[in-house]
Amino acid sequence: MKVFEINSVPYGSTGRIMFQIADMIREQSGEVITSCSYTKPRNIQFPTYHYQIGGIIGKFVHIKLANCTGKHGCYSKMATKGLIKKIRDFDPDVVHMHNLHGCFLNISLLFDFFAEYGKPVVWTLHDCWAFTGHCTFYTMRNCFKWMEGCRGCEAYKEYPKCNFDDSDFQFRMKSEWFTKLQNVVIVTPSKWLASNVKKSYLKKYPVVVIHNGVDLSMFKAEKSDFRKKNNLFNKIILLGVAFDWGKRKGLSCFAKLAKELDDRFQIVLAGISTQQRKTLPSNIICIENVQDQKELAAIYTVADYFINPTLEDNFPTVNLEALSCGTPVITYDTGGCGEMLKEDCGFIVQRGNYEELLNIIRKLPEKSHAVTQACINCSRLYNQDNMCMEYISLFKNISLN
Image 1 (tube, rainbow, N blue to C red):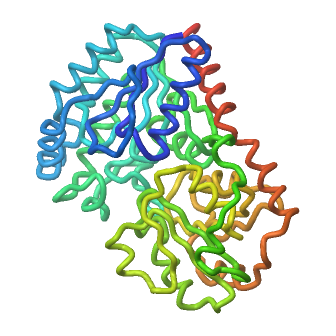
Image 2 (image 1 turned 90 degrees about the vertical axis):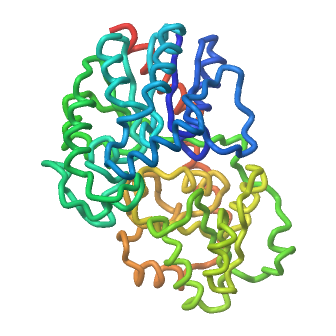
Image 3 (image 1 turned 135 degrees about the vertical axis):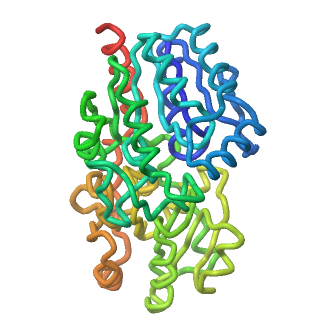
């Protein structure tokens, strides 16, 4: 089995998932190449089989031109030709794509190649970008224009940023680009996203749900002196973790909670930038980027509850990481967030219902051993090894048809 992996970035949940699948393919005696666009150094040790798509100058030019013209995915011809040559030379059985947004590919050129090449393609959608005219998620605005044809977009200044409303052009181009292939299977990590795909122009393709998984050997209950170091005895610790905090991840919700909860509670946020720390109430404990996953697991473990007031999401791995460390999750019912919680593992709150979230938190007891065990048992359903084997099984099946 030979698989070629493509993703926009080598970090975050999508990057980790790509490399997890690649590692399992190699463990199964298969061959794999992973590939991503140029990204700023983040202390990532790339494997020898990794391929960088294009360079810093080409990506920078693509971003600037796309911002000015609205033609995201219409530049980077040289980088895309280099990727195509790499794919041809490797001659994979399956091409596995993840996120294609990020201004690093000429998508028309790439999909024309796939249409001519004829090899099977598996495309994992980690967000909604593939079937909207601009945005990666539509839920904050409750906008369903993507079901018919995007125009009059209110989100055009947000990622992927444009200086004017590009949604009509992008919708027409993407619907043309993405529907020209024959041998394609779309994978979504949640049933919620799968149901969206079936309402979009991508509905011609078969859709398979493969839930995201976490490394249970890494994310597990770990002893920690965090409570002692921060003098948090007799406190109910409420933890929030995000790779990229912002409005859609619910940062403002934590700011409100910090002002309204009594001193029984302590909010801890991980992944906060220096600038964001300055804007938050002083009674929130802020932790900047946690590089060591074992350290992060220890913070998950010491928390009494993991709070995820996300307003736009798919199937967030942070929820799974908390569960695997024995910590119950209180989450807005956003995207596929509600799909992963079993009984006794936390609470699902109507998306955006802050008052309901606040009332639930105010009544919370300290974490019990029974709840801890229920969370760990639930997390076993989302073992990354199981996720990877589901992908490999899909790759084998599609390559034989």
